[in-house]
Image 1 (tube, rainbow, N blue to C red):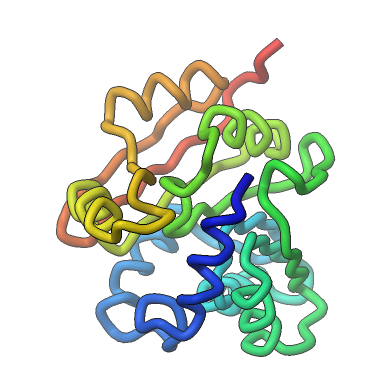
Image 2 (spheres, rainbow, N blue to C red):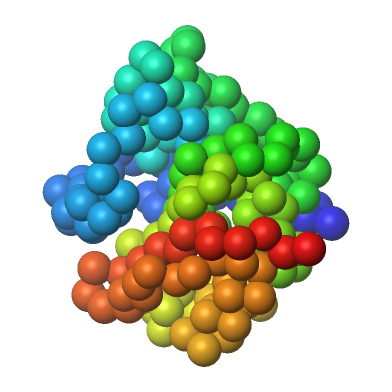
Length: 206
C-alpha cells in the first residue's frame, strides 16, 4: 500500500527536514504541544510516523522511567536512524510498519502524537478509527506540524513525488472526521507556529 512512500522516505532519511536535531525555532513550536497536553510522566504514548526519532527521544524524556513511547514508521531507513538516535532506552519501542498493520489493544494509550504524518495516511478515517480504539477513556490524540495547512499542502503538491497528493484536510472536514469517530476536538490552531489539533476521546463508536 505504501511502497512508493517507503521509497520516498528512505531516500530522504538524511534530509534537512528529517535528520538534524531540532533547532530553537522548532523547539518553540514543540513548546505549544507540551503546554497543551501537560505533564507526561508515566504515560503510554503512541507516535505514528516517528521518522528519525527526533520527537521520540524528547517524548521519552518526558514520560520518564515509568512511561513508554511506542514509535512507528513505514520507512526501514527512518526506523534504523531512530534506533541509532535513541539507543537502548527501556521506555522506547520502535517498530517498522504502517499504523494500519500495527496491532494495538483496546484502551492501551494515554496519548497519540501524529507529528508531521497525518497527510500521509492513505485512508485517514480508517487510521483514525484504529487510533481512537487504542485510546484509553478520555485519552487524547494530537496532530502537529511545524508549518501551517496551506504550507503543508503547497509543499506536498510541489514535490511531484509520492507525497504530492498527501493533503491536510480543511477545518470543517477534520471536525467532521474526528467527531464521527467519537473524538471531540479541543482546539485547532493554524498559524505562524504551524498546525496543531488536539482531540479527546468522548465516546466509542458502536
